[in-house]
Image 1: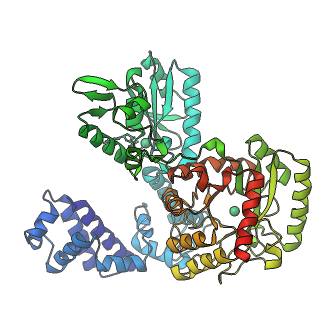
Image 2 (image 1 turned 60 degrees about the vertical axis):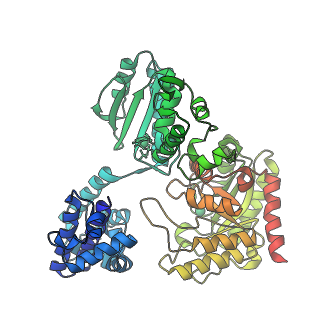
Length: 576
Ligand code: DGT
Ligand code: CA
Ligand code: ZN
């Protein structure tokens, strides 16, 4: 049944036409068709095959042919055209109480606002109230609407939820009679965003445990209370499901509730092929339970090695596991350096000394201090004179610091014409040059791609930072042909960054995997602007692992001297 899919496209078409200010009859026609199809109990594909689409109420020859086009191609001409004309993100604005299509259109046309965050900001700055037909009251309503909408729909970034989940685990451990406890679900898989917190526990006194859970200080509301499962709503606006399971089933439950669903389905199919049954209680041959206590035992009963949670997305891990070719993923504690940190020299808050001591506390051996370049005034871009002061200071500090070294780096802006924001004589004095785009996002794909490609080809550049520019929940990736970027990086031996700031995670897991497959070197950078943000490195490692990264793919595992050698080697190779 593809009814939902078809209804959804027609509904979005109606909305986009509304924002555009199109003919109301046409808009209504798409809306009605969408509702009709949504409420159908018959399969739309079948109706189309039987030539009966035209019999549906409100669907004439014209709409019927469009529906056939959707069924054939997954989309249709008008919808594609509208999507090119109007940013699709505006559709979410219509879901906000207090915002109709006319208002959305006015806001977009006046300020070019396309994300909820920008809209929120504009309201707080009272820019919206100033628009004709708006006013302070409307603005206030929009703000309320945004808040509700976020609570209703939002997946939350891992970087916000994981620390909370860990805090909760600590509290439960301290207060309740538990034996084992683990975070499962998408958090255990380290997915970039998560819907809820899934926690598994074993205990001999489940009721006591659940009472502790229900009365945790972070709990806003108990949705369901039971000895085996309790669900609560946390103050952050996120749900948490806690399950107490039998220790004999611990491994099976952990595997089941870690998911992903797609991975579980493949594992279950494999079990069936082998005459076994698997569920959250164990692996069974007929009525006999043959595994369940540990995850290793569960996987092994089905003929699989243990598969790291970060890989469990049905992206080829089952096939690789069956062939004995699972990657040996880079480990969280193998990271020796941070490839991208900002200091007081640009818009960071930390002094070089503070960065050194944080790195030391984290057990790192090097940190590349990559401040913004001169023309990025909003981010305190470093003028050339100060660059050399910074260089001298780093050399001085490095002499005194045995275990941890700073690397003199820069995050150099790629200007709109593809040239770099420092002259070559300056660039060649900088040990580590990462280049990135901070302005001119609106350019088309050809221009943006060629900017990045020329930066990659520049002999003094080592890496591209946050290659797609996306910011979770705030900004979509800019239009860039990543394939071409990767090809260029590959042929010039340059690295691409996994920016570990939890709202960026750019490259993401899928693009990281594409780089790994092509043998492109990767470098994780926390992009910290406060020293504590260096701890975001773990989210970068998570992306690396989800992208099948092994030691050989990642520059951060190198010792300081080896990394410095790589930096020189890249320049030597490109200057010949
Ligand atoms: P989320 O919460 O959307 O960020 O992602 P998950 O993966 O944590 O999803 P969630 O919380 O709905 O369910 C947790 C795990 O439970 C999921 O990864 C796999 C398992 N699970 C849930 N529903 C099903 C199902 O219908 N079939 C199978 N095989 N597994 C399921
Ligand atoms: Ca979940
Ligand atoms: Zn940066």
